[in-house]
Each structure stands twice: as C-alpha cells, then as structure tokens.
Length: 424
Image 1 (tube, rainbow, N blue to C red):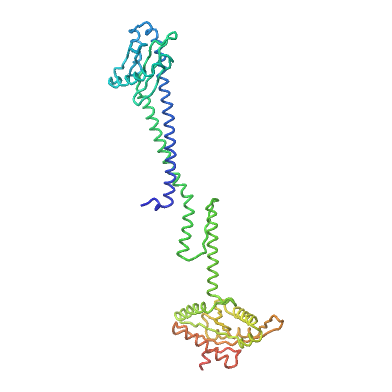
Image 2: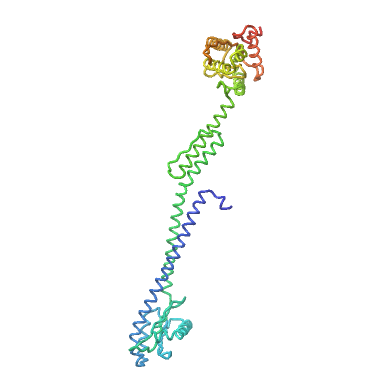
C-alpha cells in the first residue's frame, strides 16, 4: 500500500512524527558533538595537569641523572588506573626511565608508544626548541608529550599515555541518555500529533460527510459550521455559498420545469405528473377526484382587437382568479393557450361543480383595466369531470373533461357543464 493511499490522519501523524524525529536527530548529533569536544578537552586538560605536576618533580631527577628517583616518581602514577604508561626521554631521545601499568595490554601499549615516539621525533624542533608540548586523543588512547626544561634548557620529554575508557563511558552514558530522552520526546510528540490531527482533519471530514449526505439524498438544504477562525472558516464559508447557489439554481430549474412563465401557474407537464398521482391515490382509496377545465371565451378576438400584451394581461388576471378560488390542496395549471386545468383532490361532482361555478362568476365579475384606460370584461366556459376512477389511465378523464368544456362552449359559453350531464 502506497503512502499516498493512507488517510489524511495517518499522513499528518507520520509527517509530524518524521519531522520531529529529524529535528531530534539533528539536535542529538549536535549535542553529542559538543559533548564529545568538551569531554575530550576536559580529559586532555586533566592529563596535562598530571603531566605538569610530574614534570616539576622529575626535573631534578633528570638533571642529575637520578634514575632511581625518576622511576619512583613515575611509579606513583600507578595510583591513577587510567594511566597505561609514563616514559622519560633525555635530550638525545634516549629512554631515561619508564613505567608501564601491569594491568595494561603490553602489546597495545608498545604499539601506542611507538606511534607517539614517531610523532615526537617528527616534532622534535617543536618540543626542544619551541618548548611546546604535544597532545592528542586517538580511538583507543590519548597522550601528552611535555618538554622538561631547566634554566631555559630542554633536558628531555615526559610522555604520559592514558586509555580512553573514562571518556568512552561518559560519552556512552550521554548517548544512552540522549536516546532515552529522544524516544520519550518522540512518543510525546506522536501522542500530541494524534490529538492535533483532529484539529486539521475534523473540518475536512465534516465537509466530506456533508458532501456524501448531499450525494445520497440530493438535499441541498445543508450547511456546515465551524468555531475555528482559520482557513477552514473561509473554506466553510465558500462551501456554504456554493451549496446555496446550487440550491437556488435547482429551485430555479425546478420552477422553470414545472411553472408557466407568464402566469406563474403549474405548466402542463407538472399538471400531468400531479394528475397521475391524484388518480392513482383515488383509485387505491376508491374516492372521488375532480377535474375542471376552463377556456376564456373569445380570447382570439381579444388578441386581435387589443393586441397580445392585453391578451397576456387577461391570462394573468384569470390565473389569479383561479388561484384565489382554488382550495389549499388543489392545483391550478395553464395547459396551453387560454386553457386552464384545476385538479381537485377528494372532490365529488357537486363540490367540483360548485368550485367551477364560483370561479366562473368571479371571472365574469372581474373588471380588467387596460393601458388605454379602458376597461374590459371577459367570461369563461368550464367543463367538469368528477368520478371514482376505475383505472389509473389519464387519457379518459382528460378526454371527458375536454368534451364537457367543448359542449359548454358550443351551447352558449360562459357556463359550467358536468361531463355526466353532457353524456345524458
């Protein structure tokens, strides 16, 4: 599994942990380097102090060639378990006196002393003329070579050889402590990062949940809120704006798809969808439903005489009257030209006829003022169909109500006729 496939939570934890680990590693390396240099200088300073003290005591012994005194003084260095060897050389680089710790590895000590002797030979001018000592720390040992000077003359050199065990132990202890501190610090950082990742991921997952909910329900009445005042607040704000725009767009599209743009009533398509639901429910419950179809009388004459703007005004006036006269749960639709259809749920013949007659009278009584200041009165004819359906077929009720309307117009207009009456 690739790292890119992990969740954002895991990536953040890994990122914080890795960054902290690198920072701790750099800090540990720097601390170890500084500690090593400090401990190295301290070890060499301590060995140099021992050499200075021994040199002062050995000056007279070397000057008077008192080998026994020199050997006794060098032997006193055995009190320090770290000292592996101490050697005095005269001004001709000959060994005057020496001490080798019994516990030291003789072969290793001999090799170390040979390396130091070679260096001292190369640095003889520095030791005898400049009277500047030598000191260094190697991997397994450290040494100090100090000139022995009396009244401005270099009598010889004192070489002290010590192991690095104390230095290694201090460095090892420091490294172990540093590792423990780093592991503990890294564990704390990981625990903190587990908590902190929620600050970054919770808002993201909140939005993801909102998007998933919208995708599943198609419901855009969703908004997300946050108490954070960072970039996530800006993200939430823009997300909510986007959802609001989509919601407005869908509402507009739904309105355009189901509404007649001139009158604001339901259009034919929406009316047929609602009619199918109404008929199906009435069939299942075996109850009445009613249809009323209105047609404005002589509408073509109005258009021809006053123009289409007045015709549009008439359509709007009629639509308003029908909408006002309809019951709360009825649907009023414009299904084409000057024809309007009312869908009356749970409405028997008498009730449906009463609704239609009330609307016809309202249309007849309405006075329309046109732009020229003149007034205009209109009438409308209506066909009514109200039965308990025998099937969920829509064509039959539409044909019946249309036939009733046609008969009303053919027999004098400005009247309401039931389809049943027409059949009789």
